Length: 64
Image (cartoon, rainbow, N blue to C red; front, side):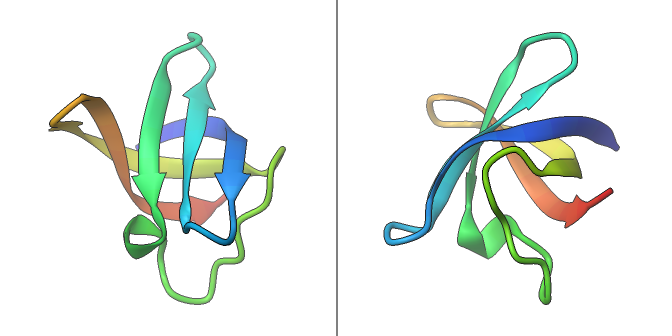
């Protein structure tokens, strides 16, 4: 799993970006967040990565 910080989170649209410790960005959607986890900007998270249509995306997002 990768560890990073939620860089942007749009609660109304249900999407955001996570930045890992190397400065890489990962797009994620609310459907990629584990149940019971409430996402907020600045939150430390762990996640898996997969190649998306426009770059790397995060899945299985959970709090650290």
